[in-house]
Amino acid sequence: MRVTTAGLIALLVAIGSAVPASAHRLDEYLQALRVDLRADGIVLELDLTPGAHLAADLVATLDANADRAIDVAEADAYVASVLRSLELSVDDHRVGLDLISRTIPSMDEVREGSGVISLVARADVDQPSGRHRVRVSNGFRPDVGAYLANALRPDSRAITIASQLRDSRQQTLTIDYVASAPLAAGRLGWTTIAVLLIGGCGWWRRQQRS
Amino acid sequence: MRPLGDELDKAVALLTALDARQRQQATLGYAVADTVLAAGSDGKTIEPEGVRASTFTPAQRQMLTALIGEWVRVADDAAAAARMKEIESTLAETYFAWSGPPTKEGGAYFRIQGPAVVIEYAPQALQTRGPDGAPEHIHTIYRDPTNDYGRKFARR
Image (cartoon, rainbow over all chains, first blue to last red; front, side, top):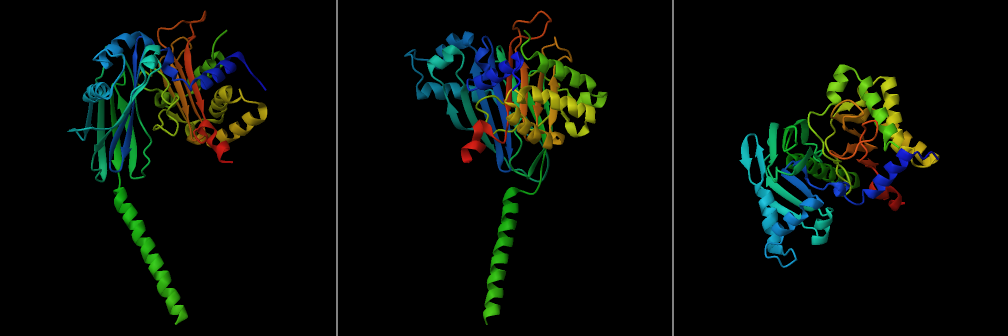
């Protein structure tokens, strides 16, 4: 077994990644955006990790009534403000986002700089066959933001990403992609074939018996 | 001591060994502040970017394999050999991406992404530097995307 110092550090860092890798970030607000292009819409996943030096400011904003707890209304208000900072457009048309889920860390995690605020939002978008362009812009806390923006590899074979273009800070991500035949139609086609095959087998068996 | 020094040396050597077209494909035109696929992103696969190893010469492939080996060979020899075999079997589908100056001192980020391996090297800005100017505070990940958190072993 070969264990170099560097290798050991790599291993330790990998093991330590059970704690968010951004735990050392102090005066920046890491904002990691993932864009999931689906056959029936677009899902945005955003993980926000405020550095420990931003904790006091963030706690004051989150805990608006200063009762030392983040209640549902406060969490909703904060996440809503984040959501308002996201702009999504498809083929140059602005598209609205609906919040699907959100996770708010504890006050202690926020103070330690290890708390991650996560939100998932979705836009119902028709994906007619052809080339399309999605543009996502994250304008949340640009004063301290450190941004990451990436397209997830589509699960659907009906979507193929052609290119990704970002600004130098990754606040804006533009994805060119191609949608082929809608997935629903594809499923319908296979279902039809399956029904015909089963029906055909039944008819053939009956013919054999008679 | 140079944290992840051998890893950085080999990555810079690989980048330098690329021809102009390959290097252009490898270079990301934006800054990467941190790892993209760290904890909490299990099961996620980002659309790969960078230069695909299918365009590499045999010598370049060897350099990429040696670079990946810096992370893989932390394991014992038998386990590392088995992992390297898996990774090499899909090496042609593996991408190498670089963001930042093409030097050891530049604080550049790089990523290796393939069906059987994801590696990220993300030096943190404004942190301390070693005597040679190389970054000393680095976030790195090494993942087997087919076996996040040992799922393969758990199924047995």
